Amino acid sequence: MKNKKGIEMSFTWLFGIVIGIIILAFAIYAVTKFMSEGDSLQTAKTSKEIGILLNPLETGFETSQTSSFVMPVETRIYASCDNLTRIFGRQLISVEQKSFGKWTETDLQASFPNKYIFSEKGIEGKKFYVFSKPFEFPFKVADLIYMTSSEDNYCFQGMNSDIERELKNLGQGNIFVEEENFLEECILICFDSGNCDVKVNYDGGFVEKNKKRMYFEGDALMFAAIFSNYDNYECELDRLMKRASSLAQIYNDKANLVVISNCNSNLDLLGLKLDFDGFENSNNISRIYINVEEIGDSNRVAECKLW
Amino acid sequence: MVKRENNSYHLPLRLGKLKDKGQVKIQQMAFMLIALTIFFVLVGLFVLGFNLSKIKGTANELENKNALFLASKLANSPEFSCGNSFGNNKLSCIDLDKVMALKENIEDYDRFWDVANIEIQKIYPVEEEIICTKGNYPNCNFIKLREKELSGVDLYNFVSLCHKEKQGENFYDKCEIGRLMVFYEKN
Image (cartoon, chains in turn purple, green):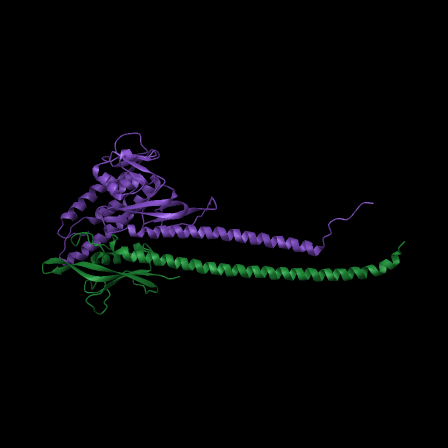
């Protein structure tokens, strides 16, 4: 006779186990979801905090300012640009942080319409350097912020003495200007000819990087082209032109207001505004600069200075 | 040999009793599970509520930080700063003529500084509050960049307020002491 003895299990037990598994699975799912939401929240908070901490870099000084910040864990910072939202576009910052050996992925971004950050597409590390420089075109338009990771070293070669002095004064740990201090792993930036990662043609007014050419006028834009990628540079420049256009309108309205107080300036600011409005890409910058320089000179010698 | 007749008489009764007992047990188990689920849902809701209030707290903290930094540096931003138009580059100096021009174009700057409103007030000499308009400027002492009524928290910073003043056939630079107030909405 066959032994029919097996594990005897009543329906009550079976029912309990099935429902128990469902509850447990739901609880595990909820906890996992909750943890990932917590990570996303933390990265979003960090993104916003980075933007807020950059505020003190925007000052009225005409010289460069430098600062650094250290993150508690390995971090990737993505500073991207949106030039289509509202009038002035916006700066977007998102952050990925390492948690239990894995990068937290998030699509949450903090946006700042009044910031202009120039950096590579994504920078990774624990310590980050930032320095800022005012962009005047011909009036001050904004403070440009250059952000780099301490893991990326920049070696400058063949620049003029003014730029060398400025870079030395920054005292930034990842910028090297003397050849004897150059590190083996270094992003080489040449102002003279040579086989370099970034080539700067100072007199020609352009920077060549990854086989792409970014045109500039003035040192603030030159550094912007050196420290950022092509897409970011063009997009931020477009945003800057939009703000410059709005400022030209404000200065024109101010000129009309102060004329009542016998303060005459006679500058063609509406013409300049049209130039800014017609901006398409950095290729146009030298054409706009002719008018910018002329109006800047006129304001400098005017009896009633508008800026 | 067991007689089938006897068993067939007693079996349905025993099975019925067992079935009733089993049903009660299943019901007990079901109630227990429902109670357990409700308990976990309540705990979940409590944690969610706690977390939401924490998020609100973080948002408020960040708004406050932003407004605090903004109040201290806004006077130096291009739309407000004196630049070189009142002599050498002055820090924490607001060009009131420029701010009046900005007021005319303020729709362009919607949410640009991520604050609810910005106000500028002359604090010396102490006078009755006169809100600046295109018509009464510069004979006024209070500039509201946006006309809307405010509910929010304000943070302020002391600044110099400069403008060009008419003097006969000429003009001169007039600077006074004032307060730059930044309002932000509390969540």
